[in-house]
Image 1 (tube, rainbow, N blue to C red):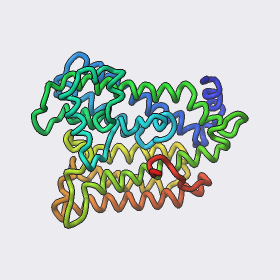
Image 2 (image 1 turned 60 degrees about the horizontal axis):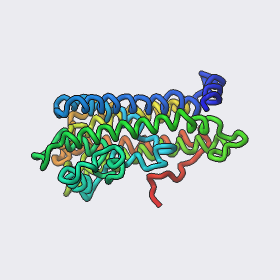
Image 3 (image 1 turned 180 degrees about the horizontal axis):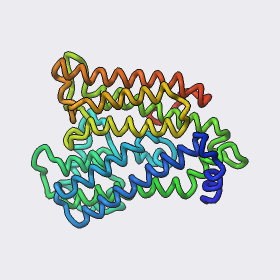
Image 4 (image 1 turned 90 degrees about the horizontal axis):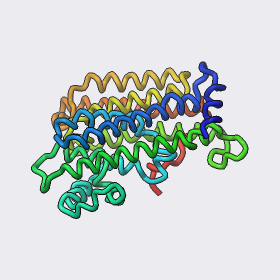
Length: 322
């Protein structure tokens, strides 16, 4: 299955960035890192349920997820795994409610075959965060659920990686060739990847920054992503780094977009507010607003510059809803 994959990669000119480089240098390594990090976390959880012991591995797994989270097409979209890996935002608090029910419920729900059937809101990285960084005492011994959640994460990451290696990468890389009914032209792949990139920037602007900002009269710092583990700003920085790498893999001939990424990254690095708690005070809120404005500028620049270079426009993707 991989013969044509490697043949295509070998024939791709190293000096010409395009979607084969995105697959080879960004997507496949990203999913491999995520699979490796979640397996290590699951293995560690099998040995110890101590939250302090597991927190470093949890953060490595979250790092690896953010590095590839913006790639929301292909195998990860087929079974809705992205939501099960990270159910956020969760404005109605469905995850905590569902997780409490599992904690207090039948232990049979924690077996691998049954845990995958549980609500996506209770699973994944945010579910595990609630167990490793509890805001209040948990209603029951969390060890079995910690192990089940970590194992479920590792299973999903492994299955997504395997699906790319066992066929989907080949489908992407043979776009336009006879018999490829998924991507009838190479332009369709560029379209899909460009849409993933732009949608990822929008998610960063509207959710990771927009939700805690709320409004001037009603800031919502409690809505920041991964607040319990102190990762809100870390996820913003890692997301910018990952999407910049993806954009460069598609085409290095985009100096304005690269400069816009660098500006946003510089602002995020200078921001000393790990969970964006400063949105409640005018001076610190302004810093977060300036960062959000830089991400808006990045979005507009990427659309105007990358679109013509790749000869594509932003299209529909799963994050848009029905």
